[in-house]
Amino acid sequence: VYSGEDPHDWSDLDLSGYVGSNYALVFLRITATNEQTLIFRPKGDSGNYWRGTDLDDMGTKGVKIQSNEVDTALMETDSNGIIQFRGGGGNVTVTLIGYIK
Image (cartoon, rainbow, N blue to C red; front, side):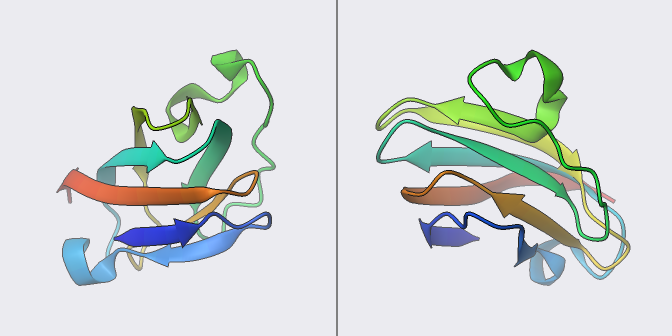
């Protein structure tokens, strides 16, 4: 669903082509070419989810990835099937593994 440089500011990732224009619980697979932290949230959520080296406060919405490794995130979309994400810079690939409407 996404491959490229991760954004430093909150950016939309439209999953509606996969899950429909509705709320969905999505399971994502994330790979990165360098060590970094990525955070995901539903579009419209104004929460400034914690970013740093300790994942304890991020729950299932955040991942800390080592170079060329894989991690997963479980989170909800908004009512239109859209999430937002941000990171620390670097190339990432986000794949939709599955979802529940």
